[in-house]
Length: 90
Image (cartoon, rainbow, N blue to C red):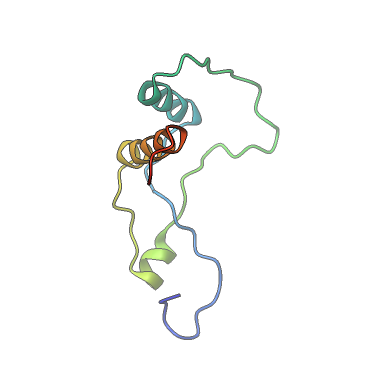
C-alpha cells in the first residue's frame, strides 16, 4: 500500500514473539473466565514446529513493527466481543 514503487508481493504481518497454542489458550481462559477445557490432540504430520513469523520484509518495505503486546491485544478483542454479546454500541 505505502511501500516503495516497484515492490509487489505478500508481506507477513505478525508478532515476532513466539508462544505456543497452549499458552494462547491458557491466556484466553484466564482473560475470559471461561470454564472450557483445553483438549490436546496429536499434531498432524505436516504441522509446523515453529510459528514465529518473519517480519523483516514488513519492517524494510513498510517501516512496520508490531507495537501491541499479546495480552493487551487479546484484552481489546475480548472486550470487543463482550460488547457485541451485550448489545452495546461499539
